[in-house]
Length: 308
Image (cartoon, rainbow, N blue to C red; front, side, top):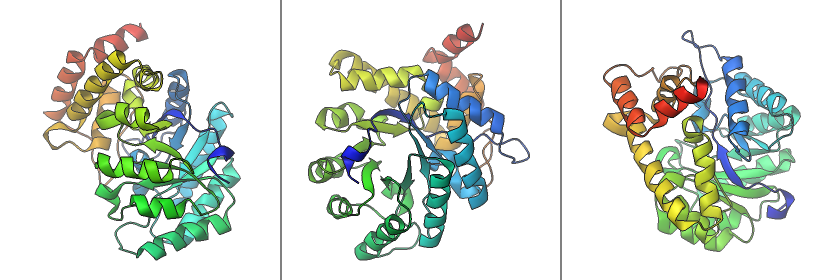
């Protein structure tokens, strides 16, 4: 397999996983989020990525969620499952579950917390590729996962047979660009930093983006990506500024991104649900600040009007 083996591109949401107050996965709300993503012109979805709080779920719950997502999507867009874990055996098992559920691919972080060598990381991905024949999207998130998929390492990982894409969420744009130049001819490059440098990333060759923002920004996020893709620079620059401002709102005053995203969804009447421990739902004054910010950006009024 290589980048030509899949047609993945465009804006993709990292779907949130709505939990009830007792911690149970709310399947109905999750299905609603899948439908909202497709209605909002998303061109693929990520299930149980970081935004989906996979660290708070058992492997059995993650596997069940893969099946629910595939069942709801019904082939309308690609479904890629987050199967990252520390133990290689767990990644293989989760990736096999994703394949059995009908997912179109898997997204895999390098092993986190521990610090394997470069050769260990390559062997990790190779072992998954050898065990499960399914397209692999690499996932680089060094600010959280500890281990960085450096540009040179990504170039080497392109030789792993099932690696076809990467979601690169590095904060370092220079590193992102270097990776794009080294690996962009071999794999499909998605940016995970659309809100920070999405316009530049797409102009330079990124074919898609994966983000938590579509969960609450919806159709506007798709329009943002399309403005980048069609080089409508005036619109793209305006969207870029708005996306950056909204992300600063969601994470302002020390708010956790995932808790802030769910709280914003709930305020907007969308099926956000609660996070699962160790994360806790936001309380005041955070909810008031989010509500005021969403009103200031015109999102609350727009969502309320659309629901009437």
